[in-house]
Length: 430
Image 1 (cartoon, rainbow, N blue to C red):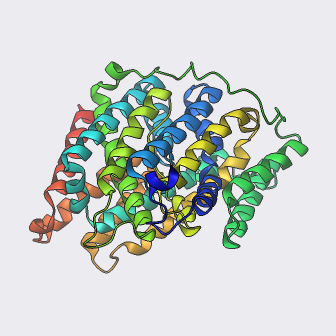
Image 2 (cartoon, rainbow, N blue to C red):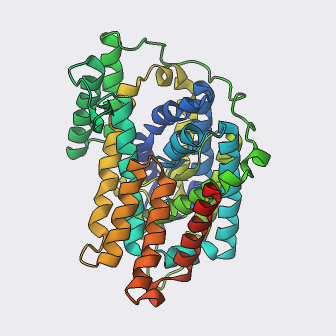
Image 3 (tube, rainbow, N blue to C red):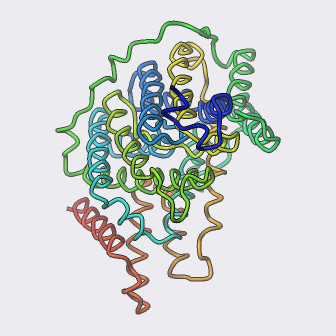
């Protein structure tokens, strides 16, 4: 049955290879079941319910990818988007998490419509390559400052705005050690390096009395505190219009880039041959809507899926294994609740380092490309907002190209996004 549906022989794979690939991808991306509840619980959301929502959203998204697109790509709530949800929309802008979930739902519906109508492909084609790279790097910088602040490595300083914290304290030392463990294990090609780093620091923090051990296995907690708690009408507030825009834009760039990148590595997209990219795009946009109903921020394709492809994964059976493992993870909620911020912060910081690599793709020799890209990346951490970074980047790109007589080089999609952000700033100033 598996052979017939997933066409394993045709793709040059086997059940054993696909299972190994699925386990490999799960190990590399399973840190999200610890990190996502940590981030979203800062909004007042029930941590245990977010844990369940995270596992279910990842399982459902991966299942849809497996059965609809039949691609070896895992899905889960996205890093960066969860930070934007928690620290910008709820923390800085003051909206409720229910309204933020409503915004995620609306963005998912828009995303689905953009995918079905082909507008998503038009948007992707129109965004400058340098800007796409800068967005990924900027989100990385944003994650980095969140990690450094939460682990108390970077603290407030009245004289210099930010400063170095007391790195001789137990918490910051654990975070620093965690980063070194994760980076070293990944450099040594150890599968699940991020997850292993989180677990090691969690055990050490328990031994040192920083956190309490709550157990390992139990029945899954209730999802009721977040399930169907989204406030769609509240999300239609004028102040959330640009938030929905940012969700859509980041989802478009992040998810599409990941899908295409991993698919190319798996040779699922080749010139002149039919592919299932359209189905994959439909699968990831559907998962966003489902995730918002469960009670988590936007679900997206995970770049860590490349590890499973490297292990031989070529079909949806890999994604199906990932989905089943996320369902099994539901029974590890006590362990997830025992993970301290000093264990998850190093994971955030390391993911940030990986995302920063995108800066090499920026055309630094061309100032009209380099300056908007730099502004995009810099404004995200310095204004503590992914939205502001995108706004400064797109607006400056359009202005600089026009000022240098190259307005025709600006794709209509870029003009559209820049105009929407100008309108957003005008609305805020009123």
